[in-house]
Length: 422
Image (tube, rainbow, N blue to C red; front, side, top):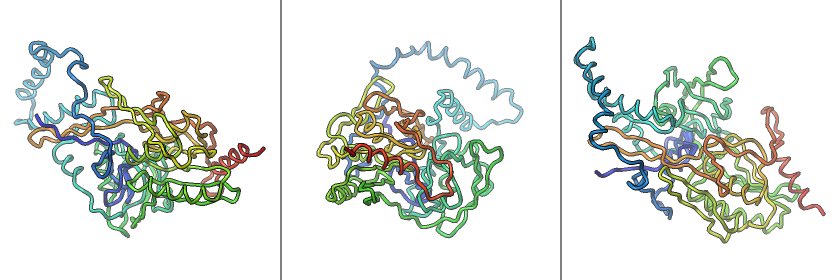
């Protein structure tokens, strides 16, 4: 049986709610960008090999059940099937719906929120290519939880302007309950032409009642790299995503900044929901001269190790990395490697904690698809990223969002100045 498949980074953490594909991070607007990039290993210039469709070799799997054991195992299922067909009050029953419900229940029993079943209609909608226009609310989102969750609004986006925050769960769109609706389909409800409005009902931790937001969609330009010299003689680079051009743009920024002989460098990954896996390795390679960047571990015990590519442009300069709850996926890969090697300090807040890889396997005869978690990411020192996140070396919370002060950035500058002072 031939299996089609698609590897997704679950947050990439992010999808951009864009009306178009941007990278694998999921933006809602261009950004919920369903940047839906969720495919972290595109063929577009990426050298990373695709994962094998099977999750484990026969030798690595548990001893398979014999036909007799399988029959015994499924006896209760078929008994329940017969009872429904014989005794249920409303006949005839919908056999395809029963079958789909059985698959859905089986996957839910695994207890993994990122493993699920998409029926044929849902899978067809989720597979429709986006138009390529970057129009939306401008937020990184995670589509794999119980509800579509905001990872981070993009700076200056409509999502940020109305007050959406990391961790907000979208429980209704335009008054329609999103309970049980796949997050990738919720994203499509949020997408829409610029200047149109969408009403979002949000559940926020610590707030008793749901919050209502009316967001005016907009055309959104997704920046990749921002850089400048700070007054203190510190170089500053902010990455907004991990796209196809990020390493080239980062290298250009570093070359320009290093010509000014800065005393230190701040890499800002706050609000960066992720992107291509290979790009995360490329970016980390600019700051780490050699060694492992990230490890993927599969259910059958296999490991895939990604190592630095060398020739980095900033492997010696004192370094501080800024992170927060919106730093996810590829951002966590880079920050985790830098922290493990002691290459630089992490400053800010605990990261999102998205470190799993999903494989979408279409079922035969157009019967939908199964999305199953196939691997977890670990830092070079073997720390699990998923649902844990990274704890900063120096925690600096940001509580007052109404002020222009940036205590995290100020702390990073302070740390670097202390390092270089005689």
